[in-house]
Each structure stands twice: as C-alpha cells, then as structure tokens.
Image (cartoon, rainbow, N blue to C red):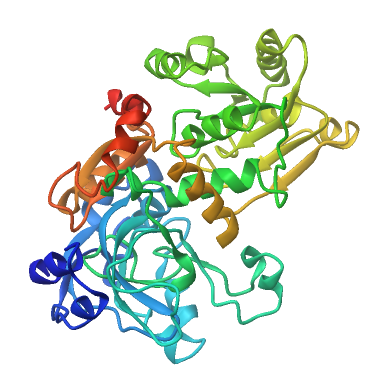
Length: 445
C-alpha cells in the first residue's frame, strides 16, 4: 500500500502510472463481524460499547465492477450510522447486506461475514471500472454516501427516492474506514483545494444532509430572513446548519448543552444561543410530555425573534424534542426531520400542527446535485469544516464510543491512509486567507 500511495499522490505520476502500480493483496479495515451480532443481547443501549465490537482486521480488497471506482481513503469521519452499526441497533446491518446480496451478482459481493464501516471520505482514485469517464486515477476526491445505480425510474426525479438507494458504508459494504474502498463514480466530488485530508474527509454526510434539510426545495427551501431553530447547534449536523442558515441570509436560533458551546458560537458571531441545560428544560415527565415546558421554551425563543415563532425547525434529536419542535414553529412553518438520535417514536400534540397548518417534512441525506453544491460552497470558502478531533484508524472505536456517549462536539475525523494530520493541502494561499475560520472549531477538543 505504501508504494501505491507514493505513486498515486505524486504530482508527476500519470493515470497510467497509477493504474499500472499493483494493488496490495489485502488491506486493513475497521469492521464489525457477523458472528458477534448477539454480543450485546440484554445490555441497555447506553451501555453497548463500540470498543468491543469495532475491530481493525486484515481483509480482502473489494472487487471492482462497472461504473465503480476504487479509492484510497486518506481520511474518513465518524457518524451516528457507524455507532448504530457497531452496537447492532436498531438492527444488525448484516440484514442490509444480505438483502443487497439477493439482488444479483454485483450485490452479492457485499454479503460478507464482516462489514467495513464508514460513510465519509477524502482520498485519491486508484482504479476506475468500465463505464467511468469523468474520473481517473490520481484524482483527489471527497465522497458523498448516496449509493444508487439509477436503474429505476423513480430516482431520475430525485435519486433519494430510488427504491434501491442506499447509504454507503451502512447499507452497503466496503465503507471508507479501509485502506481501499469501493464507491460509485457518481459519489465522487472534487476535493476542496485548501483543506487537509481529515478536514475534507469530515464533510460529506452531515454537510449534504444539512444542505438538503435547509436549502433544497426537496425539504426546507429556506429563504432570506427565515428564523431557524437548530437543535444541537455544535454537533455534526447542527454545526453545518448554523453556517448554512447564516450564509443563506437566515437567522439561526441555536440550542446547545454547555457554556463552552455557547462561547464557541458567540466567537463565531452567533449571539442567538440557548443553553438548554442552564435553562433546565424538561420536556418529558417520565412517559408524559410537558406542554408547560414547551411554552417556557417558546417564550425564550421569542426573546431572540422580537416575539415571533420560528419559521423552521432543524429537527434531528427526535423523540426527546419533537413535541417542543412542533409547538414552537410558527403557523404555516416547517419541522424538517431526520436521524432521531434520541429515539424514533415521536410524539406531539396534533392540534398545534393541524390547526396551525404546520408541515412535518422528512429528509434523508442528499442527492448528487445537492451534495455537489454543498461541497462547492466549501471549495468557495463560504462553508467550513467543523472538525474538532481526529483519531487514527486503530482508535476509531474510541471515537465511536465518544459519539455514542455524546462526549464530542462537531465532527470526529479518522486518519486512514494519511500518516498524520495536516497533509493534503493543495492551495496554501487560499487556506491562509480563511485560516481563522478553519481553526475555530478545533478549539473545542
């Protein structure tokens, strides 16, 4: 792998040079194992430990098919789907792989006794399969996680609607936490030239998800002057949401959980921040929701908005916050929902939705155009990575544990083939012009 990377990253190497350099016979990858799916039976969800189930093993290279590309991920990042995979909740991802395997010969490649995780990457192209014309070995790329072949008609209106759309590294095998990964050619985007490998590798999933939720007409359709309530405004989704709202002329109303996070947002120029722990909101009393707390929360929001309710809620915690989110949205407003990291069974008082003509809009990742446009905003220096800490591949399970226990802020990166942090920058002048913005999130470790 060392020799191949030396050639692939050389500015003097041609695509033919890279294509003619042999691939390794095997590779290191972060995996969960099919024979361990029952290891947490009877254990409370909060006590399930990714450090016991996520391993770095030596495995075979993925076989390359049509319209596919082999890349060497230089860096990846952690997302909640890696946590869910590693604790086998809400179900084992081996069910996804078996279902994929039943679709035919190409799908059968994914049905293995191990699952390589990871849904974010920045890396270099090593090989291209039949039918790939827009990319070639040596291209430096970021990768989004919408894995879809576009064979069905539905996806040609919006690929996220395709009945065979999957999330790479979660519902497919051969994810990004491996020395070699396999992706569809239509997952590739140009790597922003001013970023390091680990910064670029932390963008794809949460940035594109936030872009679709807020900006795209497929979900939020935010306009200038909209007030947007953002839960978890310093998390992997919320950190990008804050930037997208401000960049698009909106007004973010940010909810965080500590004074340090309030200070971070204040340092970034955001003064409309609510520390939910300091305010002591209790939206639930056991299994019963508390409308009096919704009202107290709404009153706090209106202190920032001049008495108006919010136009839109960026809703991803799910069960813990959903009733409050519906309540505080203005008449005719939208609650844009994804993820549900605190629980999938949402409850809310339908009177506040139905009689006030509010809309609940579901949103799931992003199509290629949405991911491309979000990536372009980064390359233009208008949106910045929110990376706060980076782990080595051998320590990826520690990062998954930190995410599972909510002991993190922003995005957590993983070095895969990169030797150390700080590598991969191609345009140093462009980087220096916005270096303070690039470093702002790194103050919170």
